[in-house]
Length: 222
Image (cartoon, rainbow, N blue to C red; front, side, top):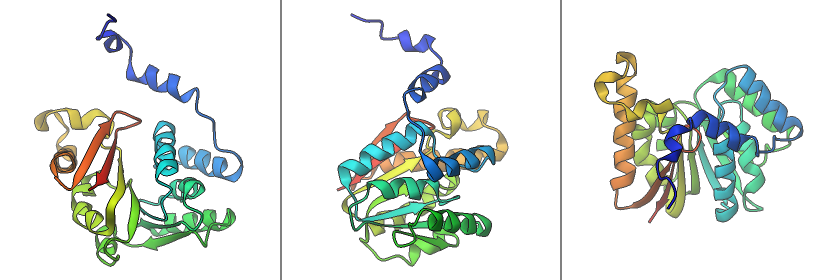
């Protein structure tokens, strides 16, 4: 029988680097958008997360996707490659400057008929969206707000729909106790803990939490 504790002696950073060494970079303009976002320290999903997301999209082939957290449009553009032929994406972003950049990137890649950027506070914008309108949701915004988005995300996602929540491990902070986390981060920590408890105990969902990238939760709405 193998050593079940062998991985304890290997840093997660080494494991992540090893996995990423097998991941192919995006080609062309999409790759340029990703590299510029990383250089400018704009939050974009990690490569491991991107590959996991791709597999979920290929399996689901969604027609209507909701994204919370557009940033510069990279993740929407990436997801657009794996939709149903008639698939559409609605993506929500608060920051006005990032919305301008995202729309320019979407236009440059000829995806304006597929991706619609909705500017505003996602908490408020979500309330304006039609119920049961989406069969796939990607939540990748302010981590302290996931629990606040949750009721409306559940409302707008259809039965059988997939909800992917990124960055749920908060660079490891979520593993720590409330009092060992910096005071400025305690509210975010507690809200993420509440979110993870909610999505794993709501009888309307089946959820798996994976230690991919900075933590990914995959939920299926029953």
